[in-house]
Length: 575
Ligand code: FES
Ligand code: MG
Image 1: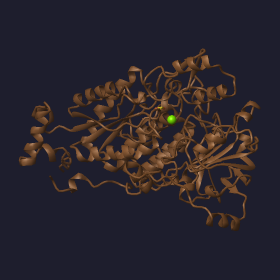
Image 2 (image 1 turned 45 degrees about the horizontal axis):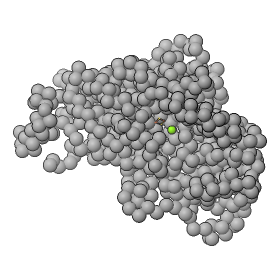
Image 3 (image 1 turned 90 degrees about the vertical axis):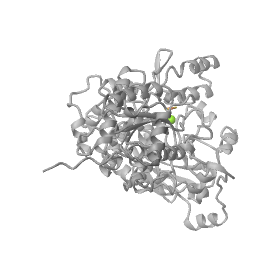
Image 4 (image 1 turned 180 degrees about the vertical axis):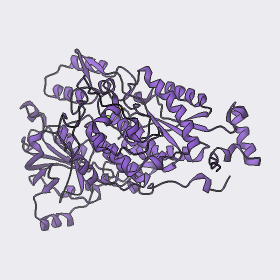
């Protein structure tokens, strides 16, 4: 019996033909300085680089790309690095989320249009990772991801800081008069000591873990710190593996299965990860053609405890998780809840990539039967205020507030909130439910991270540290508080959040999955008839495309025309 010959490489269509396009393509490579020996017949590995001087989280990616290149060359491939836009959390206005889909399109079309037999995706800062996964899932060319690792933690007054979680607390301290301006300036100087993404289990680290849970990177890659030399070694291994992926034609469609999404969600819950990952996973699943909805998150949350003691849900930083064995050790604790036979880009089923179950002596990673917190760290709530669902990160909330009834204090939009939340006449008490609307995907637009509404200073000074807050926005993965997020449909498309009035009673019962506006239906209908939903109406450009086509939070906020995979280049006529 003879073995089937491997399918021809995609790049053969560019470089392997003796026609005029073949001549043009080869001479273009020679114009870039590549000899035919460098590219003829070799797997071409794209290195999709989101390096940018505007994104400190991804600023070390040139060195990382060099290490990937080394691995590709050693395995007999040709590495070709290409840039995409880079979406950074810290400097982009109005919100980086507005541009995630733009980056995903850039990544997809670059992979599709160029002669890549496989790609290495280099992402790190919050949106860069999901954007690259979305693009790669739709392009469906063999792909492997390498995230950039966490930054060295800041040290302030002898304490290691997370970038978000701790800073939010200090900002509250400043507002409450507990921290001086001089100390605040010292904090600013100390806050960002290195490249790499935020060092706690915020959105970037959650998404890095999710990549490993999905099987889209090599085992152990997610938690290596950005500045640890082992990250460069992982990069080299990723480059080598990318050449094999091209030869094996192992595509994202073979990895991104329903089982892989279950595994990634279970991992996200087990590490107390960011609620932003919910939106991103819904979007990636839509690209991969995998049915996934919010209810699956609620179901998996009901059985998945918190097995990692990492901020914001716990005490440590991701670096300590790495030293305790990293994500493979976390997955080992969660193994009874996982689909062990899920395929991974390593070529092995997930179960065969896990380490032995040696107890973690450092106390950072727990076993499944002795977790740091029980299940239900995340709840999906529904009701007449959120017919298509909303989410609450219970592990970051005040337990007593997860079941609460209180009168609404409504802010029309972010400018209204900024104008009035510290107004001495605002009728607000610790029992009030703060409501912010017009901050969803179409309303803001871009669904910014405004869901952790500030506590009015007057209450802060009285010692109030948490209140129930409800919005159609998102919340930073490093934030905390009893925040009901991602309310869908958002007020800007006529969702009932737009009908709440000051003083209406709102009932939250997170664990029961309930969010109720205690106003009779006929009164709500009367209000609806007299309410014109307010939404942003950009006149031109990408923002106009965005508000026209963005889906709601429960669908992942992708564009309506981007579901599924793009056509395979082999099916298209040649230029
Ligand atoms: Fe880039 Fe947090 S700002 S990861
Ligand atoms: Mg963030």
